[in-house]
Length: 292
Length: 331
Image (cartoon, rainbow over all chains, first blue to last red):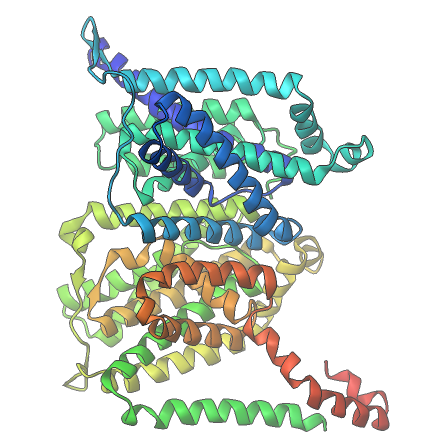
């Protein structure tokens, strides 16, 4: 394999991986705070893409206004879902949470399919998609846009968790709910805000992924890769989720090129079961976290 | 008064058996086809309920075992000319072997992590089916010829019904006996408390292995039967939404209850037909039902049964009180 091809693969692996990383973050943030793993998070990705699609079709707003507006709407939807469907289940056994969030996701998917059918829509990006060529390596501007947006979002999230009151409250709740309550933090409100944040990040992933796959009801199957990324990262570590996503993207792209493109998808799930077998707390999690 | 509960139960099962035996000749082909599907779904639900309801293990890959059973049975019957009635248990046993394989990671995991591992297994089987089209027919699916019995081709739904029904009844009775055997009690023990089970000398790992093996066996047999009934294997039928449908059977019927598995499977086989006028909504209704039951009626439809009996039961309580504390011994 020539270095140009390797670089090319690395680049596309990182850009797909950064989408996985985003969705993994959208899983891990509410999970850390409330202990609820959202198996319907994939459909929040789909939902975000469709919200952006509707906004850009019905309003004259430019792309750069549609994106933040979509995030706000998705966040509000997340709050509503949490309040209506998730809060009654928070204290339920894990089985109920798994199946409940799964069912919620399916409802969203089927509702979307009822209205939009299986058509594939596209969300045009406001820049040329002509690839840039750097000495044999072709860079797709869409992928550059994905990587840059994800980097910006990561910095913003890091600042949010370090500096803002809400971010600090989320960290407090994820460490110890009782202690957080004693400090005057409304744990319920933090649950809502983690859902808002998770849904908004998922929606962002949907917008970024739209130019790659098109917008269709099955976009949310991406969630499986995000699960793998989160498992690699250890499920309770935000940097872990990001590194896990990037690793998975690169592993997939290289194994697709070296072994065969058809078995590329098996690699992700083989990695999943292998990590669960050998190191269930992930590469970045600590052995003390709840896993068994 | 103490005998009336048992008598009522026998009466109920007797009525169900009589209906199952005598009604079919008076039914149309379509109703019979539905009844056959309901029988297969009962097997699926009973197996999954042993694993999830009794042993407390989450499985999102029940449909994969069904797929393994369906392909193994059909390929054996087609390629090697083995009789369907030998290929069927072979399919079940192969599915069971895969269940043991999955139990290797599953033994060490629980909760969300187990759900993820089973989801991974589902995806792998799905990809394998699609990637080896010269064996499995790929996404195009595969035709499953009708089985032969004593030289007769069971191509009519009525004949199939009478061939399949005893198998299903036997599997239900077997599940009943498993529930009441030491194995079933070990399932309940590890669901309630793994730690307490261990102090009683029950190995959680081995119990989980047995639970996965039994559930996979049931799903594998159901897969083989489904292939014969439908006459076709469609890989789409073994994906995530199929697995969720199997979970819906037991959630709507009643988690951990054998009667619940049967009720849930039958109701949810018939329900989509009642929704036929609004067919495109049926998937949505399925998911909404699942969520509604989880939130509002976590014990499922059989959870309503004691509530409906309450007016009579109160009368019974008064009688029991007159007899002394004896009546309390039966919960």
